[in-house]
Amino acid sequence: MDTHTEPAEATRTAIVFPGMQPTAFSEVSRFMLVNPYARELYARADEALGYRLADRYQRTEGDYSRYGQISFVVNCLALARWAEERLGVEPSHVTGPSFGARAAAVYAGVLDFADAVTMTARLADTMEDYFAREHPALVTQSIARVPREGVEELRRELEERGEWSDIACVVDRDFTMLTVHESVLDWLQRRIRSLGGMALYTMKPPMHSYLFDGLRDRVDEEIFAGLTWSDPRLPVVADQDGRTVTTGAGVRGMLLDGFVRTVCWPDVVAALRAGGVGRLCVSGADGLFTRVARTTRNFEVVPVTPRSAMQPVRRRMPVAA
Image 1 (cartoon, helix red, strand yellow):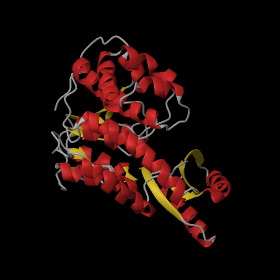
Image 2 (cartoon, one colour):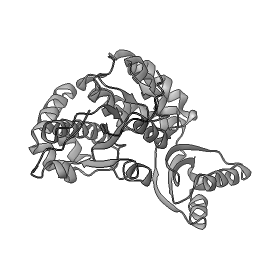
Image 3 (tube, rainbow, N blue to C red):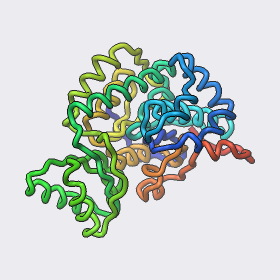
């Protein structure tokens, strides 16, 4: 469901669940083991999974292991509960770019927590199998300090070389993620630098492309079909185009679209501003979406991280819904 509103007075707060970034167990272990909200959710996650999630997270290597992915969702949700209770956050909207959309669906009441935990585990396994079989040579390259025109120039040059590319994510006017074949990565990184840009991290497996419709269909049939999708208790802003989603079926479709559609953060920013949002409570560690100029120019950004949640709270943050 799409809604179109005139910009309202920016007095509201939105909860933002960030896209996943690599996080070592040592960075979040104290929060996981001490924070009461995290301890409660980890106990519920352990029950759903049938094993101690924290133990497996600690023992397993890899930036995006299945246990790291589940733990990221649990930590983000625990931080949101902490922000409600300790900071007085009362959000009017919720959003989650890329991986963060999963936590957003739980926070909005669309998915049951236990279902989301097992869903995340199954998604991790399914995606690993899919990309190993179908697209083992694709990667997604993050490109900073190159405007959209420069990215289109890069894509034209790739096409002239007979190479395929697709935009996975638009973060800001000069920050884009581009999916390419791994074989052109050296050339691409050199060209990015020649344009005055920065070739940042490279993600494998890749994400957000029309090529992955087989993954979308498989997830829909094998995983999502067995879940209950309730209508959200507050509006969910879709990360692909900023549309406002107000039904459970709509959120299910939004999550499925996340496999095959480009993430467009500027559209999310515009939609939140139009909805009267002036403050973002970022529930989880984020080094990207809520730190770019597009975000910081438009909102007061309140980071809520495992580290900040372990510090004494001196005052409640006045937040209007």
